[in-house]
Length: 407
Image (cartoon, rainbow, N blue to C red):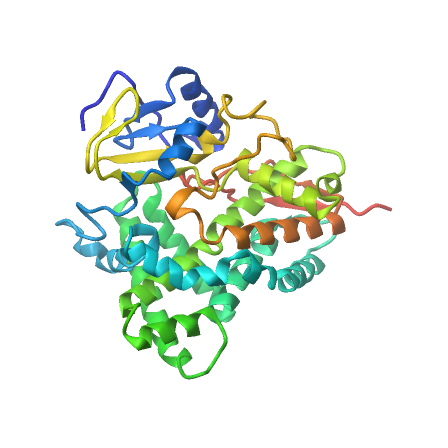
């Protein structure tokens, strides 16, 4: 890859950047929305219109046709288990494989199917709020933000919630593979987690196929057993992806949204007075402080980006968090304005790889936060929250809060 006069150096692990990447994005919006990020060794796009268009551009794709995971390069033997799971993931595939895999799971995540989960989400949220201590600090992430999406995706898929701690540990270890400047120890943890996750699912699937349950896993097992549409590896990879993606980003977005709402001051219930207002507030929270800031693509043919033409095989980073704060696309982009007329965030992506779990995530966020602030209007931040050193995932280390009860 040849560098360019638009090369920019910004350490993604610099503490200042981790806590506020938006200052960097604002600078790139002013100077060049297309730039070469030296630390990543790839071209990046930060402008809303271009990111939105490139997410839909079929000249680009997720499938790396030149290396891992589809064609693992030499020196990746220690990542064999991780690559095996990644290679069967619909997130890493393009048509026709992507079309076939996504069709199998899409029905469970369309809005009509997801709507049936509303009572369960409300019940979980109420149960968790009941358990929160009064007048003493608690961490909202493990106490509230994590259990809801994790429980819902486990129940939807047909995986025992009793294994939640293992699922969380495996998921976190695997997601660390996407953190910049990862260490050999990180890679070893991710591969070990992949092997353990795969072994657990293999045993659970064999047990589950005989119990006649009405869940997504049973449906996928039925397809696998016909021998026509789903291989064993694809079944495992699909389950891992759904379990990981089904909670990871929603946990981050829940924390980010609570932080954002509480930082506005006054009564937080004003943002959730009606279902329509709650939906608008969640959309603005997704735009204002998204849980995923970078989504990469490979060029399958030449793509003109303006200052540079991407060659086949080169990787491109689409900066979702930056696109959501583009001043040419949003009025006062750094202000939190629920119900804004120019709401069009790309936090769930767009095009072929638009997040399959978006309807579920929106429902979980709308229901859980509406209930949280309705029942705990005196909720306050105990300490200023800090973001985890995990770019391009963007979420908090913890969210220490206290509920101040009125006398």
